Image (cartoon, rainbow, N blue to C red):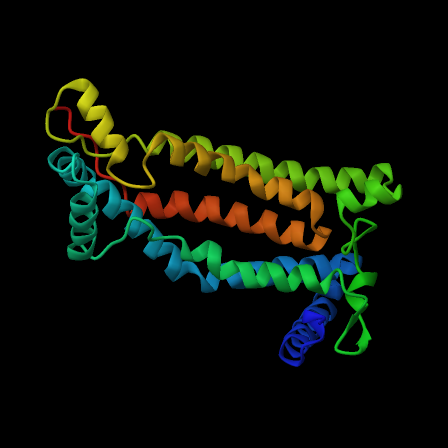
Length: 268
């Protein structure tokens, strides 16, 4: 069964197609041939604006986890030999403080349907029984429905097209690297646990939260670059959406970190 032909999905895509085409027509007097690309940027900004409250919630959750780090480390020390008791105590602490070790994941999940819709809009030749006019739209002469990987396989990639793809993909990677460096440095600004022997303190601090272990931090660092890899394979339109999203996310996180700073480490 073709998922895109399922009536509710087809209706959703048809509405999204009409919205993008309408925005492109409105922007055409100002942006010319790049009106569809400009419409995608505008939609991205609108989505991110709607998600600002979720970003604020994420910043508060990060601040809360940092504030609880010493108490979590103390629980780890007390119940190191009883993992089940440790898990219960940690969850109780998060519950009492009205936070969660996994709080803040909603922005990524909330955007997944939007990315999926944009992806579908630029790969389907027909939508709800009519031709997909979005496939005729371009950015700097490159079809918004084309991808770097697909163009390479088909042998249709021109130098100008490669430059467009490379600009977007490398920009996503650059934003990811800046994000990794900025927040890796800021992640050290958490309160120290009560004085313990050095080795034990290191173990408890690393184990205080599922997201604070060395392996988890390395994984989060790598995830900053996964978006750039994804942009190689998705249509140019989706890559443009991803670029605006990661740039917005970096700026928003920097701003919100100033509003909700992490507690400063205890020199003792």
